[in-house]
Length: 152
Image 1 (cartoon, rainbow, N blue to C red):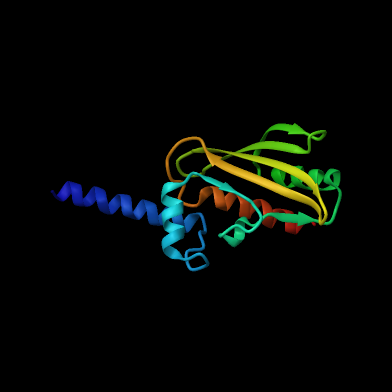
Image 2: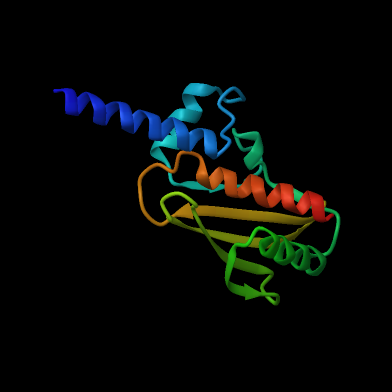
């Protein structure tokens, strides 16, 4: 029984540690309960217009797709993400991100689309294994947005 209690405590500590390391925003809308449920049961983060999680709101940049593509490619290099496929003609990129602790690999797909506001940056980050990502994929989206903000 003591071993079981220890294992449960260890699993809880690892989960809390992963949430903290991923910088999840538990106190922000749509609330802690919804966020925890999402991070523990979902392994995909995708930007879209009107997203419930503000950090996953679709972003639009006032520049051409070609200009934004160059900046996104530069941001991926700054982040040290591996660019698996790059298509300037299709304005799309596929990169992988490897977690530091357990070496899990996540796939990040980026597509740039012309819009009335300029160029929309569509992102989808997905873990290759597991049912929950503890917010890792949302962190990938936030890291790319933050790096782009610094480069622009």
